[in-house]
Length: 151
Length: 281
Ligand SMILES: Cc1cc2nc3c(=O)[nH]c(=O)nc-3n(C[C@H](O)[C@H](O)[C@H](O)COP(=O)(O)OP(=O)(O)OC[C@H]3O[C@@H](n4cnc5c(N)ncnc54)[C@H](O)[C@@H]3O)c2cc1C
Ligand code: FES
Ligand code: FES
Image (cartoon, rainbow over all chains, first blue to last red; front, side, top):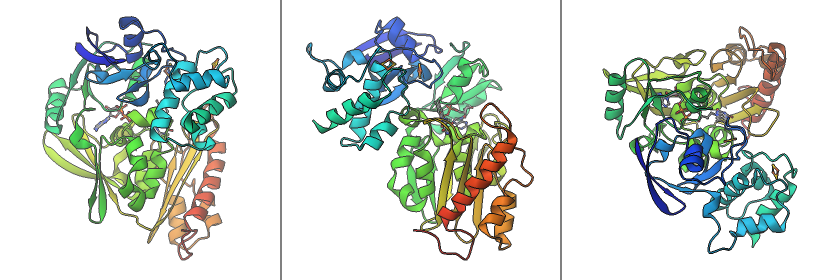
């Protein structure tokens, strides 16, 4: 089936099998491997991207369901060679160690701030419920998101 | 994990979806948010031959004031339900439940219709609908019919929906100012309830339970005890009468029975206790 999807601002048109998952479309068809696959069972959030501005787990969505939509991946955040402020805040506050969860974490965090611009710590923790990190203990991730919200 | 091959078609209206389902025959399935169906397809526990995607049927995403009740379109997402002002005013239980499903990513995709049609005993919105005394409107090739929540959940992942029928609307009687509570017990953030309890207390008290049997269900024991004037403690003790909760990795049936009586106690306390007592604000 033919799909037209705007990925990081660029309109693409591809022939895909209906069963192709959005995450495989992004990684294998569009060549954007920043989006990771952690669990493949909708649990870890490593595959989080934005569809029409909202966070979704791209391992639990078909590429055909994104037909006509705008998809943003971690590669689409940096602008003109400069990190997105959320990425910069993760760097500043040591919000990552191995970095595997980070693309999904940053996408979940930016979606969260779009919905709740000035969240409490509790709201940040709840807003990142769908993203697992095996390294940081979450503390510095929460710090990074709060700092970015307040800047 | 990759689903088995299937044909895919996208409906843009209710009528078109019903025609596509009829043409697709027995193995055709509706795809709404996909957050129950796609995980099952990835595990190959579901292998539909055709998916009819109703995700773009925008006419089915709404919350409307319908006088004595709220009408909620089947494609309304958990995220929208959790933030809707009408729902917050007239059925706050529904908003609270929707806001606790999974995580934000799940709530951005999952729909109330999908949650009801799936009929999973572990899911939360069916319990909320049972407690609120909701009913469901389905459209099929032979027209429209309305099914009470109490008659809808017939077995494990089985409902009163006939093949080829589309769930289009959830009708929720207004419970403005009624006492209510939702208790969800799980061990980790984002998890499904090991046991859950939804209570609405208006004239009478309805007590619905999550994960306490093969289907979403109400607790006849607790409800009958309360109707007969029993105390909260007595009602909680009878909460599991006649129920057969599952045993699994998370909990034994015995532990579930214990949890249910604790959660029923908490829920009734929060919703304002036994009839005759004042509802908490
Ligand atoms: C990580 C994760 C965590 C979750 N946690 C929870 C939780 O804590 N509590 C909870 O309650 N749920 C939870 N869920 C499930 C979630 O709420 C699902 O969104 C919901 O159960 C199904 O809705 P859907 O729109 O995604 O339906 P789909 O997956 O698209 O469909 C589910 C089933 O219903 C049928 N169907 C869908 N819409 C209709 C319709 N309008 N008419 C007829 N049939 C229809 C489909 O054919 C399919 O059989 C979780 C899911 C995930 C992935
Ligand atoms: S890979 Fe999608 S949630 Fe883990
Ligand atoms: S930094 Fe390693 S998983 Fe989060």
